Image 1 (cartoon, rainbow, N blue to C red):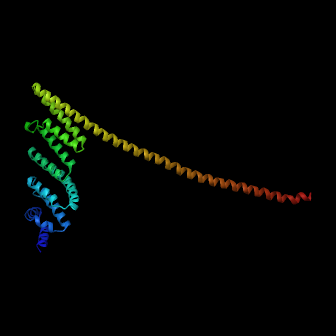
Image 2: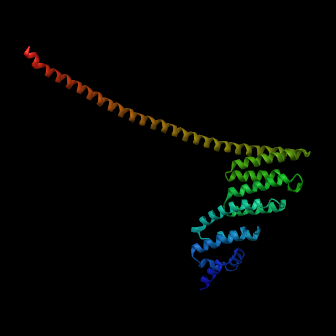
Image 3: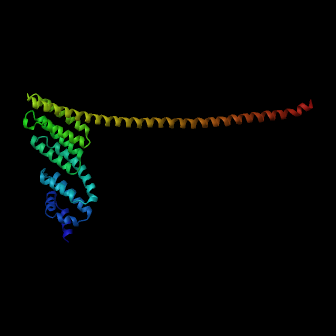
Length: 285
């Protein structure tokens, strides 16, 4: 009776009430059927993050994490996939609504989504949002120096991108790190600091070159695969067209051969008949 009442009541709740209900009695969810548990976890997480009173804070991240942890292994992958797709589409809408907000508010939301995507295992979206946040800070640092991104931050992000298999992002981050090092070298450093800057720059250049090499390799592989596919299609096309022509030509030749043979036979019969018709007359002479 309790479970039935809770389930029916849950269906009538708005997003905020569902969140409160979920926080107060999480132990009851385990007694629900699997499909109901999955729907509750999905709607609770999305209601908290994307509802009419959305809050991008630590509590929302905890609810998102709890939604994933409370899901059984069988439905975990499906729930994570649904959350990833939903969050990707909705986050773009939310970012567009932040146009008039302050830089601090934008960075706060970007950091929230970077952590949220990390929780659901969407590394690509996580890195993309981190890069957007770093770029936003760099752009706004011209008027707010405290937002300036250090070369070590760019380098750390580049290494993280490389480790997760995104060399193109790593290459761009390395370029920004080199720009930061060049900027720092103009502040008349001591000989020791200058030596450290040179060492850091050399390390970042190696990272950038490795990322560029991998990016180029992926591009060459993609182009090579496309070339091989087009080559196979051309070969198949050449093989297919002659077969059709040969078949058509062969059929024509066969029909022409039969017609010529029939004509020769007809001429032969006519000649034979003419000879037979002439034989009686020759005997009379």
